[in-house]
Length: 298
Image 1 (cartoon, rainbow, N blue to C red):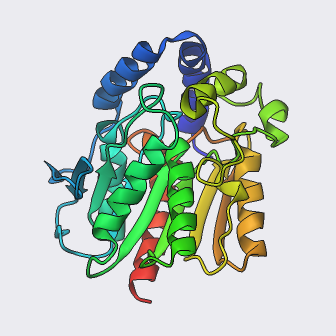
Image 2: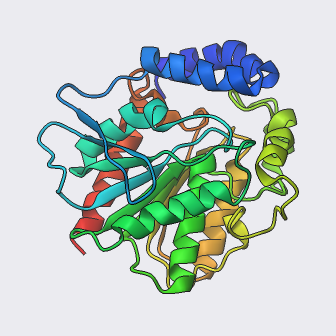
């Protein structure tokens, strides 16, 4: 592991985790937007453009040497606890992944809670997929944290409904069980360097607004995936959401889905977003890019 991993973990533990613990909804949103512009940078020559997917707003990116029509399209749902984050907070990471995968990406601007509670975000993401599902070259679904839940929930619904399937789906440190039954929620509460476990239920209450946390469209751990496309999923072993990834991978395998499960040691929540600083982030994006390229050949 790199020296930068230790430095980044210490910085996150002493700055970001306390901020996440106390910040208001507005502060969470503004802070993430501002910090992403400062810390996260795309490769040189990256293109960005706003172009909607049907009625859903989206922000597109593709790396130098990648064409917008090259396939497959990476359809991405950003993280942020269903409450904050945006395509612009995650576009640098997707630009890097575009370079590694040789594919363009479209980041969906889904509606956020609490202004739009469940199932608003899910409906937006499903509508975005429906608008591009027949694209030549295919589609790869992806997301991180809350966006990973949305990507997996969309995969389950597309499979259930018999829609044109994606080539695959990936999820970075996803939250897949909104009942928070995973033991790592308590076991890793101190080791986790980003997410304060004690605030998780507050954000999910904003999102669910009384809906059943076991609804498969909210918690894909409870969805059926029989016949689903391959899934790539990752988490760090000190994350409070570690067991979400491990249980999700086991559930998918039990349903006959081809799964690539990556568990890394002592890396922060959604570490690939720190690709500018963290060698392990760049390595994970390179590995994920190769996985996406392998889907393109099938």
